[in-house]
Image (tube, rainbow, N blue to C red; front, side, top):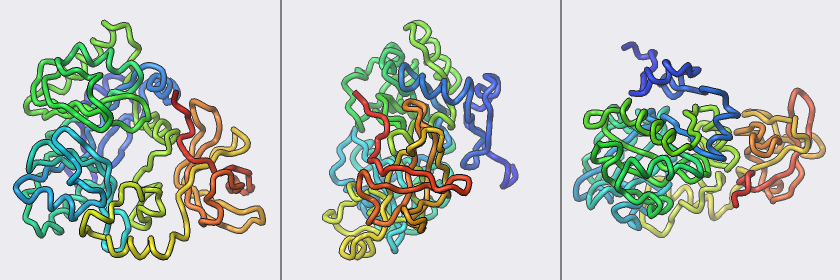
Length: 372
């Protein structure tokens, strides 16, 4: 395979046979949509959707120094984890810039799984290996790990017949390992990127048949009388943006730090040393000069996009849009962007430059969709 040729997940043939529109994303050929972004989005909000996210990276830390290594690399406090618990975290450079955001799973004593973004996996792995003074065993298992995200209010109805694990008992950001669709050692994690109740299902393709798992989920939905639609990256993006979830490469990058990005809540200064701590303490002491905020455009037809300028009432530039779309659920223009701190308060009036015009918007703290 040439360096430039995109990789394929174990579900690639299914996507192709299903007529999915495929694009190169993070170095993988991935479905951007099947039946349409709006339809897939609404299925997740109202019933159930299934995403192939096997392009994500899974890196294992094992051995007596595994926790120390994770603590050194990440900003959250992994010492608070117990087996069966996961946490959202991030890795930073020495200057406080973000290497990546990620999930940390404590699988057992001395065994952790870090789930990283696909486009960052090789960079992240190199960073981890280069910053491992504690000598933890670090293993990249991404090539063999499959990951399906089944998301939506009816997901338990679909998945419960396929496992003996009581899915309703798995609380948010916890997980169980058990049998699923006839295969063992499957991680059933109550996590996701949509804002809906859902599960992320991790399994090794050398011990479980990816196509059989996919078909078992579809068959279970049919038997339960639940509409379940395969969903692509397009709906994944509109769903996460309605909730205000950060996307690496847009909302957070090596040029942003967790404090200005609204990730101060995962940055635990009292846990001990970690890479970037000193730089972030200096930022905290001085105060951030800009903040990542959510906003809603006044006219629902005004759709913000990444890179658009954000202006004040006099037309002076005060920031830029990082993510933007038209909310499928609320049918209005929504977005996130960095603005000077003076304009970051909820309710502040700002203007988005769209097609050369300064169009009004209001700073609004996400989520943009209010869940019951």
